[in-house]
Image (cartoon, rainbow, N blue to C red):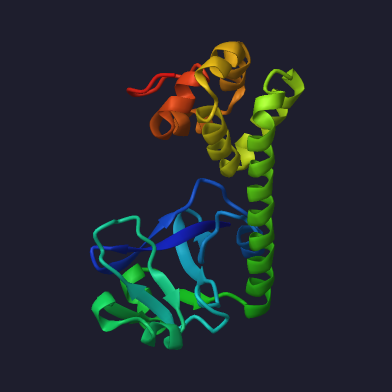
Length: 226
C-alpha cells in the first residue's frame, strides 16, 4: 500500500509526516492526487518500507539532488527539494544546511529513492492540471454565490464539490464575507441551509479560520459575528 507524505524541516533536520489517511494500491495513484507534494510512502503492513521522492527539483526541471533545510522553527515547514544548481543559487545567509539525497535516508529513518522520472513527470503535469481546475471551480462558485444561493440545487452542488475541493470552501468564505449586511439579512435562511449542508471538514475550517463567514452561514465560530 502507498500514501502521500511531505518532507519537513523540523528543528533543522529532515523529517516527514503522512498526508491524510488514504491508502492506495500503487504509487502512481498517489502521485496523481492534488495534495501529494514531493514524496510517497510504501507501506509493508503497519511499517514504512521506503520513501519515493519526486525526481524533479521544485524550482526547475532539473533532477532532485537533495533538500535545503531552512529555519526549522516551524515543524510543518516543508524542506525544499532542489537540484544542485538551484541549491547553489540560494544566498548563503538563507541556507542553514544542505542534505544531499544520499544522506536523506539517515535523517528520515527510512530508505529513500527517486521515483521513476517518466511517471513522475506525467503525474506532476496531471496534478498541475487538477490544481488549475480546482481554482477555476472555486472562482465560479464565488462568482455565482450572490445570485444562486437561494437555489437548493446550487447549494447541494456546492456542498458536494466542497467535500473534494478545499479551494471552494475558501471561495465560499470570501464571497459570504463580501456580502453586505442587508444582503445577509435577506439571504440568511439560504446561507444557513448551505452551512448545514457543507461537509464537516469545511465547517471545521470555517469555524476556526473564517469566523465572519461561519457566523453568516449559521455555524459556531470564535468571536466574530455577522
